Length: 328
Length: 210
Image (cartoon, rainbow over all chains, first blue to last red; front, side, top):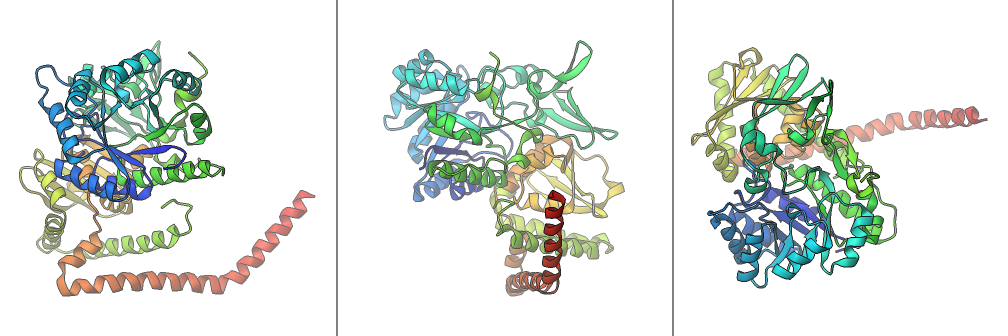
């Protein structure tokens, strides 16, 4: 491990191997069910695949974390219990959780299993983080993407556990774990079923040279010929307000803070997370390699190459997001 | 491998050769009657089932759906029926696509790279090199199932051909060496001339600076 622990996504066993081979220190992934926030068709791991992935990573000195970070359904707790129990049985290094019921279960049943607080918990202040630390013994918190580097530095002075932040990938402009935009339109929840803009509710249509993006029967965006596109989420839809069509919440763009490693180090961040369990293994290989090189260069005091990832960004655009935001 | 990695260039050139060979094979086969075209496509499905049972199982377990894959730079399109316990690939004319559940459209090389996990589908969609029309659910499932496997069609076909398949690896090596020889010949013949042109350009740049 270098100046930071590099945490990389994997939606398939092939992606996990690609991430490990490209220089990940740790890989996060989920089971093929509603317990994880990337519950997409054909994605994620069976128990057997998870076992193979853990063996592959551990044989190379790398860690694997289980994301079981959706909120459990009342009266139907079995899938989340099974996810935590199986993570412990398979030998995963930590579980990434958000639901206090699941955290309580994991803390009470599996002493040695590391607990990380998911970004889905949206714990963005010292009081919230201390609560999870004191109640469940979490070792690490993944900070929501709403804080500036100055906020993170102040927060790290007040908490005694490790902090992990997103460094690259899709942006979630809402309060994570609290967003109900997709639920309103599709009836399925990103927070409790792991499906933001579920594929079965997404349709694309051609209208002349335009591409129309529809979610749950509603048109949410229209792209002109060759205009860069984004994910079919409501938060990145274009809407008419006061007679003007525009992106109201967030434009299609990807976070890229690879050039901010010095600021994040100074702010006390321990681990950097790459978003994208839904992406192909070519993305994993390319993005993980670039970050491995950047972290190693930073650790050795060399210049960081930060201009290699434009081709894989959403909408062909990059942002440093809240890390450098000037407004409050 | 990063695009600016010098090692990527020979690999990229070899890939171009393989793509050209696949394209040529399809173009030569295209005028054949459907009864002759179908057996090789059935073989491709058999290869997938034998060599990548996990992906095959995931795709056959889906609800029944038909996806048409339309390589825009080829005269034909491919119709893939998946779900309901089986999977079938057939070829069709572009004007006979009908109304599939979903249509995936892009250049042949892009689609081949996508099938072998050499490129990221989301990035292609963002840049509009890949178009998806209709229901995205079977397309996402197909993409994820295929991306989760180490598919190398040439190697897979070689493995299915038994003794004849042993010829594929040397053929690949020969093609790669032929490419290297051509590059070497190109450098030998044009190198001195190119260096002289570069020298003239540098002198002109210096003169413009004064």
